[in-house]
Amino acid sequence: IEKEQTVMNKTRRIALYIYLVLAGIGLQFELGDMADKDITLEAGRDLILNLAVLAAFFLPIYFLIKKLAKKLSVETIVLGTALFGGAFIAGWLSFAGNSLIDIINSNFIKDPAVFNDWTNALTAPFAEEFFKALTAFAALYILGKKDLQSVLIAGLSSGFGFQVIEDIGYVSRQTFGGENSGALEAIGRIAGGFASHTLYTAVVTVGVYLLFSKVYKKYRRFGLWCVVSTVVNHFIWNSPFYETEHRINLVVGALFAFLAATFVEVYRLVIKESNLS
Image (tube, rainbow, N blue to C red):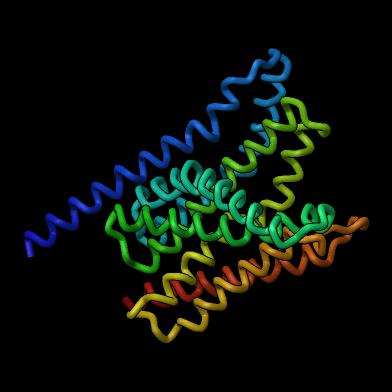
């Protein structure tokens, strides 16, 4: 038994090393380009103000996840490790995955207008949800956590890290030379942030866990539902169906309510099982 435990510890150390290598690549990918830009002092001040707008939205979410982790008796290191990976591993891997799917799709979709309209819907829901969940499970493996509560927190944290770094990227690009105001971009990201990557990844990660867990066989249908419904939700969000000329967007309302309701059911299941264990 001691020998097996030693092998497992060694394997996790190797996994941690790979995790850090991938994160190092992500740090340069996500932040290096921003640091190399030749910007004016005024643009730098604008960026700080625009990021402050995002921080006002993100900080309460972080503390809410932290409070939830405490309630579920999940160690803070699970939150931190998965959040770090979601920001600096899942992001650049998803970019590479999106690009690869784009290349494949370009061989089948010859009309440029159709390709541009549907490219986000045909890439992000698949590459991003895969790599965000994979990052969450990698963090759980490194830390040796297998309980359902930790899976939920890892999923929330990985998605949250991904969302933070993605929104910083969008806002910085607009601030440094986009057509629109960086502040307006920050507000736009917040508007869609309530039903975005944080909840997507939480639901998908728990769903995948339920699908393959021997302990929770009775929840496999629900697990499949979590994965499929979230990918479909993300697909519709990125598709032309989302766009409308009207301020009242019924599609957005339906997608938000659907995702939030699914997350509530996921949370109820986790609470139920944690009380039984």
